[in-house]
Length: 178
Image (cartoon, rainbow, N blue to C red; front, side, top):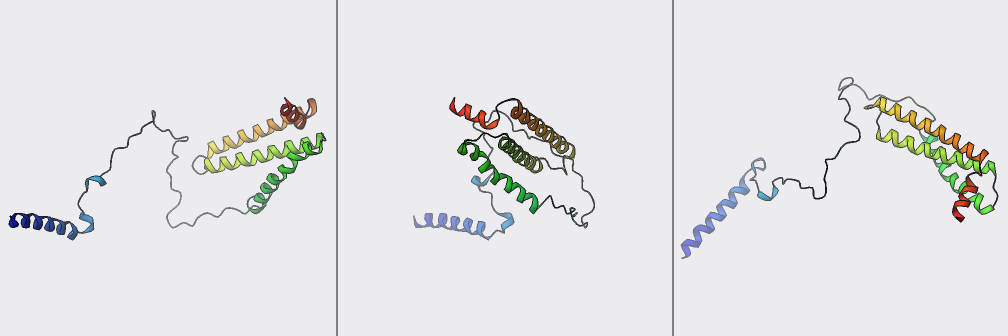
């Protein structure tokens, strides 16, 4: 009986030694490490990318230096500072007309312009981030022109609302009390 256990124990030890002695490249395949098929429980359609992949063109050679963009004071620290000033300036511009009780067309005009500038900067950053000009130059130009056109339309609409109607502050007051 002891000999029956001895041979199975020796076989187990020998097989364990063989698997440990193999090099890392020829490691045995373990069943639970095999790639399993992916099962999508609640997905009923395939995922679609928003933009198709761009053209795969390599410009220059591998030894070319990276292009250095031209320096422009409107991009960089001045641009960032302007964004922060507009964002921080919106706080008192939004609160002041309601707290002081004065309805001034000048305050409404400055508030409307600040909101439109703040929105323009945010949408411009989104277009720059998500539509790279290097891969999709035409799409980026189209979206930038759509943004510029819609910004002009919103400014014209706010001007008409200020001059021919009650204005932003009074409209918000009326909606708030309704």
